[in-house]
Every structure is written in C-alpha cells, then in structure tokens.
Length: 269
Image (tube, rainbow, N blue to C red; front, side, top):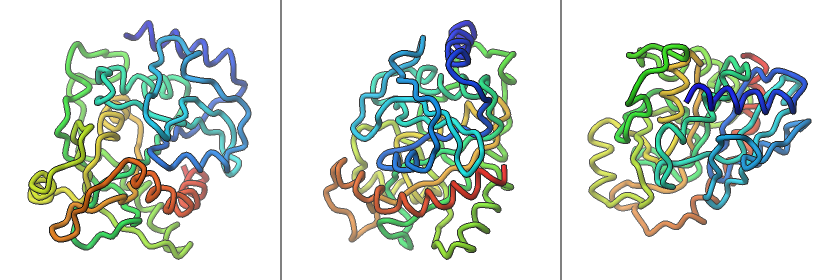
C-alpha cells in the first residue's frame, strides 16, 4: 500500500509546481466551489496511478490544484464510497496521497439526511463528532510510517477550525447548525426506523461518506473541518420519498454559503 501511495504522489508531484496547504473533498452537489479556485493544474483520477475512479453522478473525478483566496489548495472534485464496491483502503487512498503531497489540514463536505427535529432542508451543519457504523478503514496491518496502530479520536474534528468556521459564519450572517454525523454504508436511503435509530443513538444527520476519510486523516495527524448540507429529513412526520437528484438540488442551494465559509477559512489555516 505504501509503495502505491508513493507512486501516486511521485506522479502528481511531476505535474504541479507548488505544495498545497489545504485539501478539500467536495461532496454531492458541492462541486461549485471549484469555480472560486484559480486552477493551475487539473489531473483526472483515471490518469493517476493506483487511483480509483468515481462512479457517482455529481462527482466529476479529478484533482484540482490552484489557489483559493490566495492559498494553495488541492480539491477532490468527486470522492469514493464504500457502496461503489471499493475497499475501505481504496476509499481513503486519496487522503493518504494528499497528506504526502504536503497538506496540513483537510476540509470535507457532504450531503446528508437530517434526523434532528430542529433541522430543515438546506441547513448547513458543522460536524462536531461522528458515529461510525461502517467498517473501519484502519482494519488490517498498520502502516507505522503513516500513523499509530490505535489513533486517538477524542478530537476527530478540529475544535480550532470549528471555532473559526463559526466566527466566519456569524460575520457573514450565515445561519448554521452543529451536530453529530452518523455514517452508514448505503446505497439505500434509510428506512423510517433506521432514521429513528440514528437519532436515538445520538446522531443529528446520517450519510454514506466522510467518516472513513476523517478516520484516515486523523490517523495521519491531519486536522479536519467538515460540513454537511441537510438535503432531506428523517424526522417523523417529515419523511418523504427521496431521490439522488433531490439530494443534489438541495446541496446546490446551500453550496454558495459553504463556498463563502470555506473561502474565508482556508486563509486562517
């Protein structure tokens, strides 16, 4: 695995001139942030040795290198999911690569179902913690060169970055929620009782991504900021049939607010 990671890193380094400071993983419907990146180099995933290729609608599948608000960043325009048939090691492989490329922080976004009765469709939720109901990506032999066998997860999401994001949102007049993200494998959306269960065990939102990448990021010592767009509701009396297109539409409605927050936050890393 380590040899494959280094092979990917060496290939990418041969294509770029500057070292990215922040890595950004763009979730469903949130690709609009790339419009604000002064892109210098775009590398399709299919060209990168050992990289998976995203198969989900709304995920273009390329690494973008450039500047966001004057800061060198690398953005994943499209991520990988366990439900696509990849192993957890494949899902999180890009995070390993981004770390070895030189990033010092990771920003992650997603679209999720809200199970907190105070949430509404289109809300932005800053993730404060997570509940992992997916296979752990660290199962198997540990790569000591990348991180410890038993990484601490008492601060999976950086309190410092969260505090800065809250301050930025207040300054910009952007309403936000905070809460706990629960990760399930998908690809089915949840049943009413699954939504009920997620809320009962302490979740505020539920989705099919993010947590594997965060676990691997923390294994490698990367601080993480993550944000969810509440794209549908799993609250009793508000549960309706939902499609992937409706999730994309809800995410796109909130994308402008997330773009503003992330654009300001990268400056403070």
